[in-house]
Structure formats: C-alpha cells, structure tokens
View 1 (tube, rainbow over the protein chains, first blue to last red):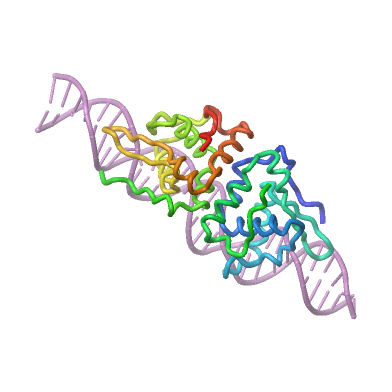
View 2: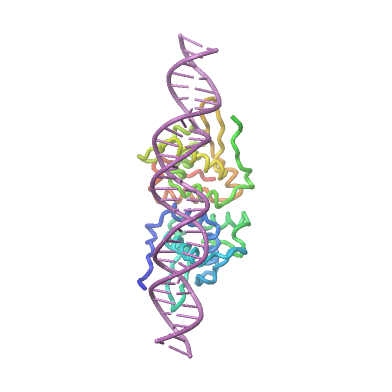
Length: 120
Length: 120
DNA sequence: TCCGTTAGTTCCGAAATCCCGAACTATGGG
DNA sequence: CCCATAGTTCGGGATTTCGGAACTAACGGA
C-alpha cells in the first residue's frame, strides 16, 4: 500500500478545513482524534452520539479530514492509525481549530462523546 | 414583502456557520459586509476577485449567510441592506469569526478585495 | 395612473456531491 | 492456504448547488 497523500501544511486551504469540519460527524471524529492526543484507529470512531456510521462513510470522512490537512494517517499492521495535525494547522492559522472546537462544545449538540478542544 | 427570517442568536449552529463560510465566494461576501462595518447592498457585492456571480447565485448566497445567522438583511426602498451579526456571533462563539477571517487572509487567495477581519 | 428601471427572488433543469450497501484489497494469524 | 480483521472502492439513488429565464417589489417621472 503506497503511502497516503497528505498535503504540505502550506498547501492547506481554510475553505477545505471549514468544509471538513462543517459536518458534525467529521467534527466529532476530529475532536476525538485531537483530544486523544496521540493516535486512534478508525474503527474506534465508528459512532457519533448514538448514530452508527457505516464503514464506507467513515472511510470517506477520514479521506476528507486527511486531504483537508487536519489529520495524518498511517497504516500499522492491519489497522490505520490517525493523529491530528493540530500543531501544524494552528501555526498556520492561529486559533482556528480551538475556536471551532469551542464553538461545537458551546453548542453542546452533535459532538457528544468528545472532550475539550485541543487548545492549539 | 414579509420580513425575512433570521435565526435567534441562540439557535445559530456552528455547523451552519462553517458551512456558510466554507465557500470562498460567500466568505468574501461576508468579509466585505463585516469590514464595511455598517451596511452594504447586494449589488455592490456581485464580484469576487475577477469572477462575476450571477444574481440568482448571489441571492442564494445571501440566504445561506442569513440563515446561518451571520448577517441581517432588510429592505430599504428598492435595495436590500446587509449588515453583519459579528458582535452577536462573537458573543456566542468567541474568536470564531476572527480566526476564520484571519485564516482566509493568511491564505491570501480567494478573498481578494476584502479588508482585515472584523476583530470581533 | 401607467411605464420603465433597478434590485432581488423564485423556478427549474443540469451538474456536482453526498450517502451507504456490496464487493474488493491488504495484512496478519493459524 | 484459508480465515478474520480493517479499510477502500464502486455504483447508483438521494440531496445540494449552480445559473439562466421569468417573475415580483419598490420607486421615479410624465
């Protein structure tokens, strides 16, 4: 399996980030990856609130997040591990991710099961 | 003409805001309304960069921004005047709009013709 | 009052996107 | 080699977006 494509941080577009996080399911997935700090397998993320997300949808959500520059994915054995690119993104767009995750946390709904925003 | 629908600020959803601003054309329109501070007619906003936006598309962009809670629109005589709801939105989701507009400004592209972000 | 002009909205078909089940691929373990 | 697990790709139906054409609302002038 060839290495997955990840955009260089300087190629990351604000529009892509906003689009990726404008879907509550994707935002919830990202929140969990970011708050887990380290790494998280896809299959551990297959539910948002009480809603089950089918595998194919999950896969495309990950693709959107990855191509938006929000996460980095690599295969380890049979499973995929994901970690967030918060630090890089925050260096390029200061405060953006924190404000977005805060907004979802404020709104309360749609991101149940996620922790606090990554603060950077 | 019945008054246009505007969501109460507490009903404004982060997902709707991100969706609305994930389109560079809409983000550019919003940036101009916000930076104009006061009011701006639709017709003054019919171009983004060198791209002309048809009237019907413009109308639906305004509708998206309005229903997301980002702008307030009222008819004055024959023209529509728009002003941003930055202050309200910022009170509910602190730093969100500033971070987003800053991100677009950093990225440089897609928002040509807009000024600095509204800072609140 | 009627006509013309300006400013937006609505309608509708084409194009693009999203969603998700089914089939497929990749990796590792007996 | 066969099976199981973890994801990806494919296909097509549902939804959303785009934009031209026609329509409506508000005013100004004669």
